[in-house]
Amino acid sequence: MTYCCALRLKDGLVFISDTRTNAGVDQISVFRKLYTFGVHQERFIAIQTAGNLATTQAVIGYLRNQIALKQEPNLYTVNTMFEVAQLVGRTLRKVIQDVTEDTQEQSNYYCSLLVGGQIEDAELQLYNIYPQGNFICATKDTPFFQIGESKYGKPILDRALTYDMPLDEAIRCSLISFDSTLRSNVSVGMPLDLLVYRVDSLKIPQGKRITSEDAYFHQISTQWSETLRRGLHEIPKPSDDYLL
Amino acid sequence: MTYCCALRLKDGLVFISDTRTNAGVDQISVFRKLYTFGVHQERFIAIQTAGNLATTQAVIGYLRNQIALKQEPNLYTVNTMFEVAQLVGRTLRKVIQDVTEDTQEQSNYYCSLLVGGQIEDAELQLYNIYPQGNFICATKDTPFFQIGESKYGKPILDRALTYDMPLDEAIRCSLISFDSTLRSNVSVGMPLDLLVYRVDSLKIPQGKRITSEDAYFHQISTQWSETLRRGLHEIPKPSDDYLL
Image (cartoon, rainbow over all chains, first blue to last red; front, side, top):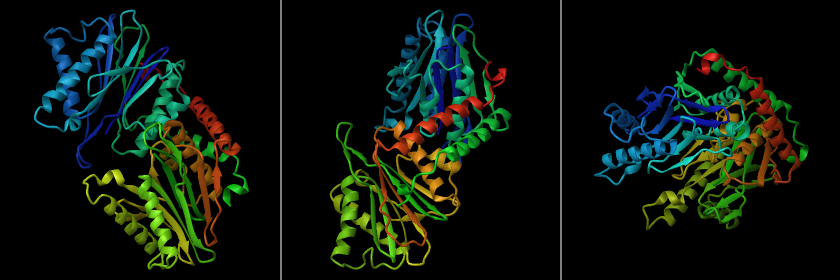
């Protein structure tokens, strides 16, 4: 399983991915699920992946290969983020078609992708790309996407995250979302990869790997448990007719 | 969809169910998913249902019919909660077998059940009964079960609920779990049915229906949003290396 979350906010983009892959409960590995592409001062593109690992690695492999061999189109020559999403979507669809030529069970080979970035002075964009190659775009009303094990971590995002939230607060909110998911589903695992892109910076962030020893993440986790327990105690007791 | 949650705690049992059923998004109804059985001063049994509505109603129908016609065994003559779980499990399995005699697609007709209660001076029990008719039993380590749309509401239970928690606090905790689920999944809907059974009382609680106008539930919902937002602000900002 996997949990990836991406935010498109007023001040920039935030991407967080876990790194656990599993084929059965006794075959667990660490694989990065957050990839970056870009040309300094011109374009920044990040891709997060959830689903069949061979499929996601093939998609990234094709995209890198196109760049290396200067095949057209590629991520460094398309003109807009919309064209980035189209290229990634077509690549994903082709990978799935190739591997499932002889089978009807396409869904075993599915993956989902989040693709965000900025090209020159155009707007930031964030896309959620489906296995069929089509996609949807984040908006001010819905400023975040999740792929993989999304449910445990969704309530905090639904309640607290807004488009206008400062990046540092949005990072805290997302890390809480990850902490909730990590606690409830062992197939989502540390370390996490965090990447923050500031709007109009047009530089490729180096990102931060958050390990299980990370003191800040540990503090968030502990403090959040305390917040919930305290909040629970602060709620007034139900009246007697709730206990009849 | 459905969300039902049941707790087996030191002081008693708590059951909460939503009431929304849907066949597609344009065919939404209100159906009770929490049923009680019992004999005053002798036994109390509650059943919660999630899954195919015809299956769950057939199971309850059979169980009531057995009692009405004094067929043996029935819920009022079996000796222990273990035998209650066996009887309910066999009934569920039979209903699914009957309706799927001519099809391989059994899973469309599946349902899951939570069954809790107490008979005379034996221990409280809570069982999670699977479509195959087998079941597991709640323990001090794992004092709650959920069926239906369980993920959105699980983090608060995982973090806060304990076996020794007083019933009124456990009710608050469960209502928060429901509020999170209701906000994130429109196929789980008000009103809610709440039932609290105090250990050794051996009486059938009347229960409480919590409607969307319920002032206490509204307060929990509002106050919990405030708790989360305040807790988020209280978490220290990440250091600069998280934003590189």
